[in-house]
Image (tube, rainbow, N blue to C red; front, side):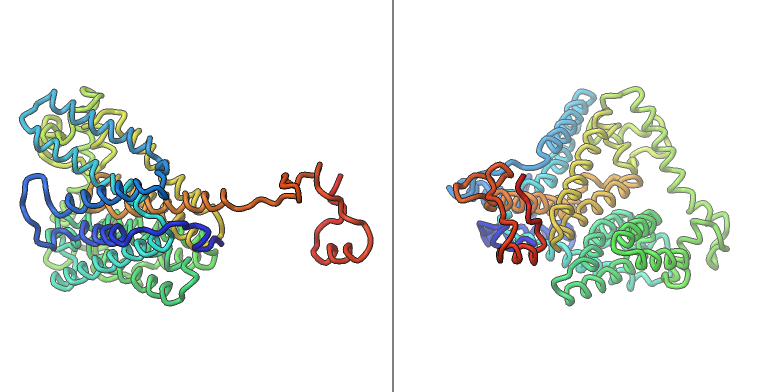
Length: 469
């Protein structure tokens, strides 16, 4: 296991550490904090500008040479297709240039937190601190969700769904469920693999159970399925017994799920009669409206792509979808793969998938760096979170949602920095050599004796006595 002294030769300035922590807590919860209205400036932009200034000043010091950022090409490729989509949109109609540019700015700005985190963090203590801040924010937002569920009541109502931390409007419920799905994954990894502190491990397990309970009241069928799949992956990774327990629990969900969540699942599967006071026709209409509507929208998007393979323009989907799906004019695509392909051209989903594949491979490489606790938690947490993001974007447009994704970009940047620090520490480790400082190869290695007292010592060590040719 790598020690702190091996993986960190510098320390992160306190100002950078605190600003990153403030961004982690504030950005998902900014709807709960009073903001000021100045054109082009808000608290998020000010946090970003302050971080950029400090990172540039920090990198300028002699003892901190800039390190190349992993996945830079993948990010740049994705940014290029976003800019292309913006330019195409201006060619199709420049009446909303400012609004389109605002969307472009937000798409790119929040993703740049990956680079800020990578270049700001310089020691493993800061990575651990910020990771715990991400977990704390997840718990805080689960608490906000519980307050909503208590105010709404714990009986199913499609118009009263938990939408914390983003709003108290049920239209944000699926967005909220995506947030819980992504970050509860990190909580689960911590609960299973944080070996150095039993207190932290049990606290993470309690927060995981609490967060899953709150997520049930978002009534998002997608999140139920994704969390079940991620739980199975984690359980099989941990041990077969835990996996068996999870499988049994999932098959007997009706014994432990809240009644409202069971009602939602049974409504979807149409396995039971509708709740009292609700007609079967009305129930079926509620069940099929969102699902069927998505397929109609995606069909319209396919026609838009067929006629405009290089895109219709960033932020233009809701303006043009009514041409081929009149009943869903001004609606979102409810699928980011469809949305980016329609707006930014057929290269956009390729750029997105390349970026996600790079992040997944980054997580896998950190997971396999060594057998330390940190490598396991950060690496496993990253590639599982990437899977969660890939899945939540099938039934929602979440990939460039800044409030939802910023903490993930910060976490990914920290994991990339952690990998760089470990590899740099390995490169500095002295290699085994002979007295003349040449590598100890079979050609210059001193022959070991085949008899005498020294031979006995070698025999006790378990090493071969005749190592020379």
